[in-house]
Length: 206
Image (cartoon, rainbow, N blue to C red):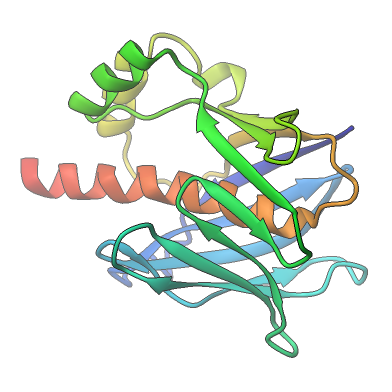
């Protein structure tokens, strides 16, 4: 079992770029291992590089490859462009055969429907291996961000951009045979989805 965290902060120098969302740092095993200043356009993920912060973890890149139907985001090595896997709708497809992991919002169907209607955001996702339906991990908002989701939604809308780093996801995985980079990419994409929706909402209100 391995634990990891995703930290986000706003870089004031990059914040002038209208496509910049935040700078994310992936922390695992007590070390910061990846950093990515994430950029995305309306409804799409740009080409983004997760830069390594430790020698044993090579750089990798993500980029949205399809805008019709299910969103598809390719995850590739940065050096040679070799495929690591793909985020395709609510599933992770790893490069090796028969390695598929689904992820889902852990709330009840009624809460999910109400949250979507009110533009709320999930605070927990569960990873389930497709081959045997076994739960192999999760990501969730940190304890200080918990509480009733409508309250969290209002706080998020009122929160001003800040360069102060904050933990946005805590995660746990039990799958040593699966490439961690695909999970790290997904965690960043899911949080950026929330940030992107907040930005659109704030723009509409303003």
